[in-house]
Length: 151
Image (cartoon, rainbow, N blue to C red; front, top):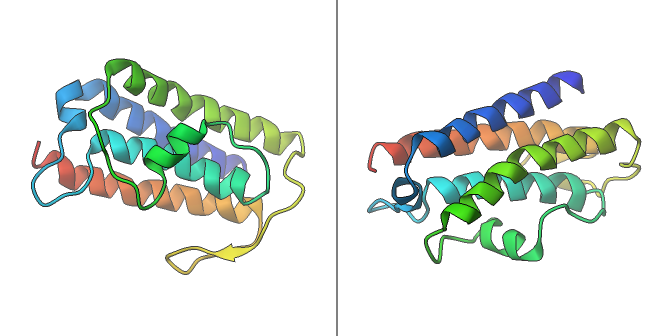
């Protein structure tokens, strides 16, 4: 699991650099032909990790219900985010992963509700969910690379 957590930390560092490299206006811009923006993708990967890992294990999530609703699959940006909201997402990028790693090391994840992901991956354990989360974060990085061509 050490490798999986290392990959997640590196992924989150990449996303944090995006937050530092683009203006608030650029983060919020939804290019023509797209239904989301850079900041939505970053909020989405953070929320999805919580749903995949904590939700799948039947445990309370670290993020608020408001953030879950705003960034879960099927949602889209309804308003532009403020710099304070962007800062909150940036902080959660790391605090959620640190908490997950601590909880994993402390044996908090004792059960997992097996399911198949939308893409057809079998998720039978928290380890599967953590590994799949890394794949999911890579998908959204690719989407963001496409978005940046139009902002």
